[in-house]
Length: 225
Image 1 (cartoon, rainbow, N blue to C red):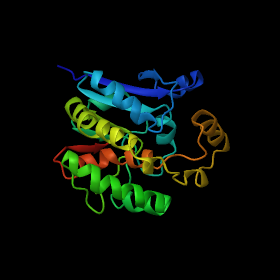
Image 2: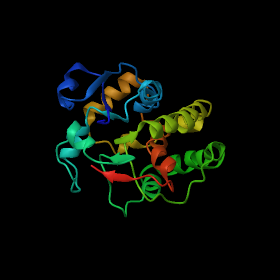
Image 3: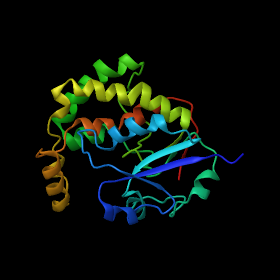
């Protein structure tokens, strides 16, 4: 039997609809939290029952078109995705030499070092994870597809507990310094108006690496698409 796919792209403005893949399911999310798309993932992934699941930004196609690395498939289709056998497919893969934890420290500085130290020592052991000094694979922006059982387990056992942990600690709400790196003035303005914050919180950048941490050392078949 042909496997099934729930491929969902999140939009928050109607004009973003046409930026998504025409074959993707669209999810309108009018609510912005400190956890961005991770909150949507936590809410909807447990309700999805396809063999493969993906929840991505409306910007995915644009980001893949502008990607600096060679991609196996410049254009994604449901048929291309399901023609491969995998446990996890990474949609915006980085170089094997990329160091996601080191880059986060260099990018966000003290805000990252302080918050990630708490996350690494006080949270990750509670879900049975020992995080190494560096990760062997970077999966950014939740741009991945995973088998249902993997995605469900990740959300239930890692993401939802992580959000709960962060909710109770102000250190994860500290300014990340991202406002000084972001080049899109209009997006900065929109974010500030919608969030009531000046800068992005550091917690969301930790969550951006949580899936990479979760799969580290596990014997999954991982491919780039």
